[in-house]
Every structure is written in structure tokens, then in C-alpha cells.
Image (cartoon, rainbow, N blue to C red; front, side, top):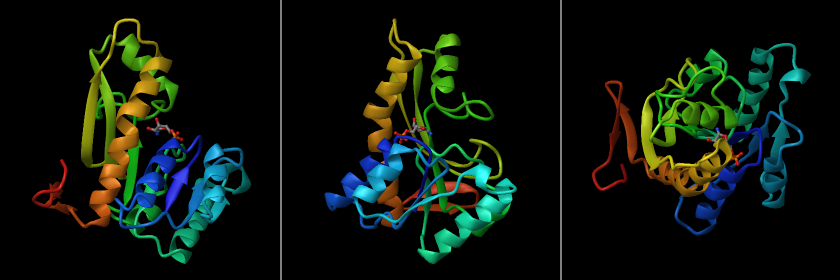
Length: 207
Ligand code: GRF
């Protein structure tokens, strides 16, 4: 199950790896917080059941998340992948899927995470801070924003002359589109576990 809000290029990277036979699982449904998201078009083109759960259509975030939970259960999803999802996940939904909700964030957490750090704002802040490196992080979702246990991180150099847009593009293409499918593959193969509050990788799996 994937939750999306935007273009869905991470979703596409994952479904390509499924189609290539590299990931032994499937995206059983897609839920978008935004009716206009191109990710919905991608999902429908692939025949994935696609739903819109926009915050404005519900009296509260919790009411929206009760509907999301219903859809997740209906499709018997094992994992909830936040693939460019901009909503906040309610605590009851996090508690219902412990270490089963996974997010990708376009920076090297714990730096440049938390409230306000989404989309292009992340890369603006990285450049404004004069960072030499940035990257992406895949992590389990907990009740904080971008604070959950880190599964994997990859970095790249911030080049002289990088703008937030060029940095965003490079991180998306060179890191996110490989890192997220790699993690999904490992999760589907049961190669990632959490023991005593730490992420543990099976021998021979990626790190
Ligand atoms: C990615 O940069 C992801 O890290 C962030 O939102 C962006 C989504 O891109 N959370 P897409 O919708 O997968 O193309």
C-alpha cells in the first residue's frame, strides 16, 4: 500500500522493480491526499486501486485516517509506504502498524527534518545552511515528524552552484529512486527487523 500526494516518481520506481521481478510483493492500492496528484494517474494506468482521501473532505485528520485504515485493512496490506505523502499520520494508525509504515525523506535525517521540512523547502534549507552533503533517508514512521528509526541513508555532494531545484532533482533521481525500492525489496524478503529498538539487517542483505 502506498500513500502519495504528488508526482509519484518514487511509486513508479518501486513498481518498475516489481515488474522487473526484483521485489517479491505488489502495491495493492494507492491512496492520495490530493485528487490532482499525478501519482493517481500512474496507479490507475497500472491497474492499482486508487483512492483519494483529502483532508478537506473529513472533519478531522483522525477521521481521514480511519478511512485510510479501513482501505489498508480491506486490501490486507503488509506495509504502508509513504511515497511523497504530505499528510500527518494519526497515532492510532501508527500504533496499528508498528514498524510497518515507512517514509522517504529527501535529506540526511535527523538534519532537515520535522515541521516545515517538506518538498523544495528541505533543499532550500540545506543550501542556505551551506551543507557540503545532502541525500535521502528511509525510516520507520513514529509519532514524531521524521523522527522514526532510520533504515537506510545515502548521501551525495552538494555542488557549487546547486539550486534547491537541481539538488532536489539529483537526490530524487540518483538516490531516492534506488534507495526506496531497495528497502522495499529487503522488507518483502523479511531481511529487515527491529530488535531492542534497533534496525537489524539479515546477513547478506543490503545496508
Ligand atoms: C520526494 O522527494 C520524497 O522524498 C518526498 O516527496 C518527494 C516525492 O516525490 N517526501 P514523488 O511524488 O515520489 O515523485
